[in-house]
Image (cartoon, rainbow, N blue to C red; front, side):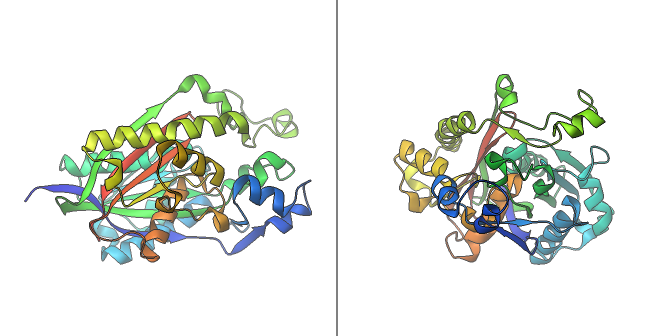
Length: 329
């Protein structure tokens, strides 16, 4: 039988500390009702001091490897995607490789912000389908709370920290990643950005004073973008796979905002109960949100072997993408 790249295990990690809407009422001008109505979020996790993106990623990867019954020496490649890497250099994937002793694994970072996991999954599947590698780790991890201005009501209510990792291996068809769709519009790159810290605007006393190292987002424009591209991504990836919308058992979108997901579902004519969400208690964990939701969906019995699932990411770049998978476990 023919083989495709498929997800064979998922692991996750969430920091212990929680920030509730009630906590935010004490720091910015907001209320629990206001946040819940506009985002669907009730609480989010925050990494402890000294707990970095690579630490959370390594813990998620370790759990995924245990579930897949793989040793560190079995891993051929690790791809890490993050909006909040430990450093510009070296790659977070390299730090994870060192922490887990993945001695035979190549390692690199892939940057596509909140759309990172679908992009990284497509890349990993390509390596496996072309017989370059057999065992690939894909991890989305965020310590995004470090990039948030906690006096900015537009962003601090949204984001949380965490990590989710997936093991990809060859699986027997018809299971596996059936199609990928990736897209970008760089003309709108200013809608979500961290202005300072790179070579265009190196760190200085002035950039720190002006809070240019924090995430900036034009929320209304991002909302309209997301509602527009979620149906586009879903329809395109399903067309590539030759699958009808009605055949999909579950849609797992990036967990940005419940109103975005509801509006996109309405445009597609798909009932909300086919869209899995867990943002109420995790917030927007950026590129970690899709693998965290995948693990939660399998744990709750919402995703079973043989089901068709579509995952969708969208975010800075502006980038968006989707993968359609026939679940293999």
